[in-house]
Image (cartoon, rainbow, N blue to C red; front, side, top):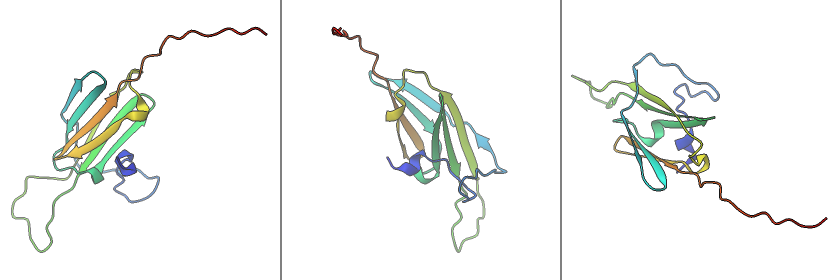
Length: 132
């Protein structure tokens, strides 16, 4: 996973600035699965590629964002279009059972896949007592 997958999209191109957009923002439909060691989150963001996905984790809140831009072809004029520029945004509150340092993400065919590894439970151990 590259560093750009962890950064919030910045449509303004200005460092440190978060842009505003006058277009629809929708919550992507999401399925969440649990297997033995992971929780897997699948979010539908049709038309969004890895360059236009941002994932942030601040305190216990995981936020996913995606941007879909109009697909304008050079040398052609759009006669009819149903795909519009839009933003996807959704936030989730994570429990302490998630290992935040091992979260991974990928995008394929407009589906964002987040793998949230479960943290190892604190193991009981015996503490040796020394004299002095």
